[in-house]
Image (cartoon, rainbow, N blue to C red):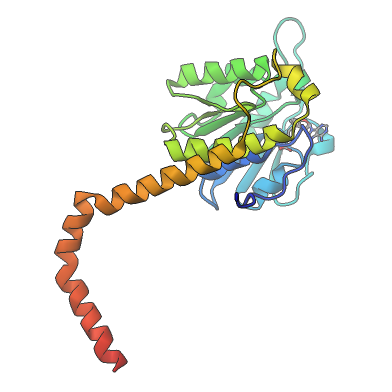
Length: 255
Ligand SMILES: C[S@@+](CC[C@H](N)C(=O)[O-])C[C@H]1O[C@@H](n2cnc3c(N)ncnc32)[C@H](O)[C@@H]1O
């Protein structure tokens, strides 16, 4: 039996970040850390539960949507011609925080285009984790690929988002994120899948339990490796007299 997800209930809307994205952020950023989000929405509320959130938003209707987040209103600037529009750069320059642990690229709205970030990367920290949402779409996938190349970092690609962490993820992290990502994928109907993939029939059954088992297997393996490690054994030998003394004094106190 698989335990229920420990993540907050995520909205079913295609606009908001989903459980896979949230699981990825949770693996990378400890509770109390800071997330800088480009593009606000209902999903911002789930982030606010665990993190300090700065949310960049171009559309006034969504500014202040989520209580607890600090909003940076950066109106959409469309220079016309061939150059893509993006957030107002001066507003970003004035409003962006100096420190944060993760940059979440989920805005502006997909139809407006998001590749302004590639022209203004200097506005952002590049020594933090980066998560590009919606890389199921070619436009966002291209942005993620270019960021990973320019930052000289590996990229982990999940079915609908891509992660560019500061350090490569370990196998348990990948399995855990995949478990949540597949949970989301399992709920999508065929018409949604067909929008993004040529063939909606998977070669192997999409099964989140497979990933749940993998997480457990990797965790057990880790524990076994630690309990058999030489450094643990040496530590146990060195601390043996102290531990013996402590257990002796504890016993005497309880008499
Ligand atoms: C993909 S959404 C950002 C979603 C956000 N990161 C979240 O997790 O909820 C990109 C932009 O679409 C707009 N938006 C957000 N939620 C929306 C919704 N439910 N319907 C229509 N537009 C939305 C906002 O202007 C936002 O900046």
